[in-house]
Image (cartoon, rainbow, N blue to C red; front, side, top):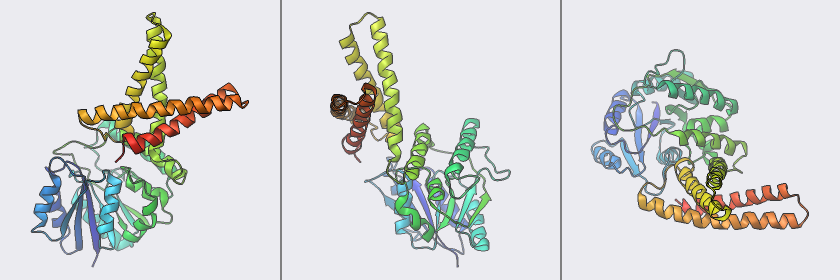
Length: 357
């Protein structure tokens, strides 16, 4: 009998999750299955609904994570609790049709597949629920990600797939745990997978809000960098660096405006520094650290910590640049090494102080 564990990561899906579980169970009659919902402590009580449902459905279980957030890490924790030969991952918003999951299982049985992907872009797959912009962005993302994948797919960014558990655990330690596109990570890290694809019906979200936003796109680039560097460069360091570069532009723009308004340099530069640091904090919170600080109090305290961290990075920047310049480095190279030292220290303090999980 085909054995499969269905891992469903959730956040604020209380309106969708029970209906989805019912659909999944109706399609899996006759299979040896379990459904593991991994919830990131949803404020809407998603985990409470699932745990109540599980009282009368022994095939269903739920983890409520208060210690970590993110889709990829949720999948990893779900797999750790799974007991079946195959693992399937699907979204909790109801956009993945459980009928497609059944067809994927039948294909895996017939072809002895290592991995089967539910593709939105295979043949004439139904992508009507995708907006025109999201459709275009997805296709661009697919073209880029396939350049870096060891295993090619028509939809390496799909959220619906099944895989042999042993193939997943082979690459588990190298996965980018803070990512949102775990399938791409698996394809990038794996070699020699027997891959098959199924055309899927990607349905419209009926209730709740999509979790896809611009930070997902930025972090996909960071995910590629981390894998190419074999883990030496953290994925969110790329996003952090881009935010820092934008902060330089903000600083220069504000300084220029103040000087044009006939303000003196020192107060103008102080103002530009404060505006740039504030901009960097909010952009890092949203893009780099997935909107970790949500409430006013969290953001107020976070901004103060970020300013504190920046003071040390400024000292590091000036100190390194000055020391190198005194040791016969050129002014430009001294400045660049100083900027790099300040950036690395700022990133370290941001991860371990400002945005500590």
